Image (cartoon, rainbow, N blue to C red; front, side):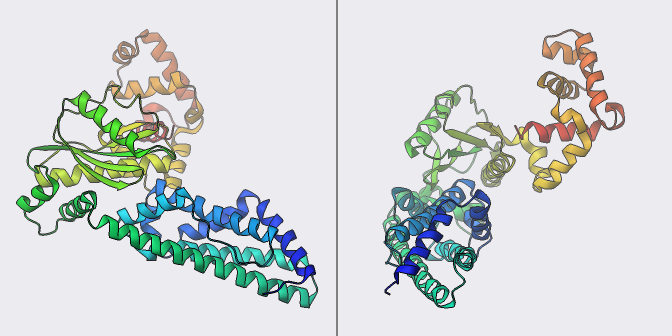
Length: 397
């Protein structure tokens, strides 16, 4: 479609607004994408969701930049290395082209925001009509081309994975986890892993930019520290491994110190098939909680996070509970907070807490008195709620 010089100038002015858009403008697109149809699986995976939102934002900026250079011209598809990795990730999760609906959702929201810009750019009816027609077609064609090319890529990735032992192993694991009627013998043959005995499940997740090999290396370090010679590994995504170790004596030590981009969520040890499932679901729960509360912990165990996992599903409610229960204590220095936590862990015994903290009993007593002064209700009157709130608070840091 030909574009008049006047409308070409308007498009250039409009896309400049897009390129300089404040964070809250882009946040509207992100919010709509997260709530879009078919986004449940992606939204439940923080690493995958982060990439999806980054790709959508990149596509928006790509369209704006292209229209700044050639207003109204057909915009080439923006397939980057990150996009190709994301597509392979979707395929590994068994998703098909339906998972690309986020691009359509982003299109609808971006179009609404774009129209708001257009109505500010001109009051001339003829110019406004042409501006909306040209850009509407440009956006629609760009998104159609993008979805078509990515659908071809995801179909190719799924075909490639059809013969991939990792993909086959993931299918077998899924059947076991779902409690499907698959025999133990068949499952063990496909997994090459015995399902009797103890199992400790781990979910290893890489920070953005962490190479998949780094996850494998971290897993090898954990195995070596724990004296384990075999494991079951399922590639859950480009930045995530599901791992089962046949041991009840997991020893992390400094196993992941040399892998700063790797986070490890650990389930409690389970026995036989039920334990295999439970330990894994616990590890997934730990991963979700750590992501939701924004904790900086690199290693987290379900046994240490049990209360947070049970009470922390509603983040706003958890935050309100912490604020109402702890008051100013929530912002106290680490010495006071650590002292109160240790006091609770010592059965509310100041002498034992002092021994654990390698300090004098009087120091513990002074810090407890300081905590009492900061709390809305004293320790003696609200001990249970305070202990729980401190546990929730600890995992937010």
